[in-house]
Length: 139
Image (tube, rainbow, N blue to C red; front, side, top):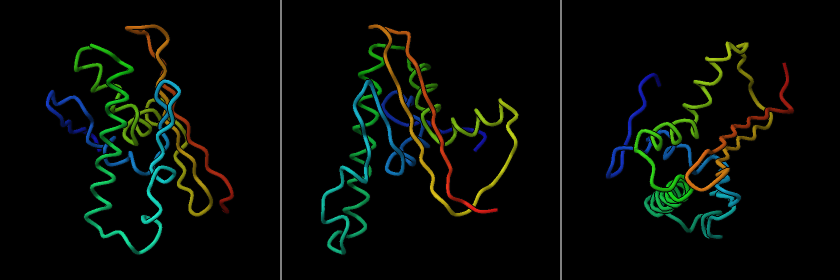
């Protein structure tokens, strides 16, 4: 996606982050947010319909966004836009492009993705960490 879209009352939350949230691991100021680990037991069976699952995913995304807002404190919406963009697959794609990384597509295997936001002091600065590990794939 070349142009990220933003949502929320202040139009400062990257929509891609909301789409990615249920698939990724987020650590916001030391607190882990991982949808698969938090999901209720009925989600792993056939007892949950699609609408209920979408509601759970949306609620999870809202909790991640609330944690990001709490970590950033009263900051301009432009910072919230930048952080929520960076903490998404869009952010990873931008980083790969900026680093002129060798473009490889791997198939199969395992993939771990972790997005972390840490407050270094009240009111900033902050550290963002984007981690991707791909393993056990074959040529």
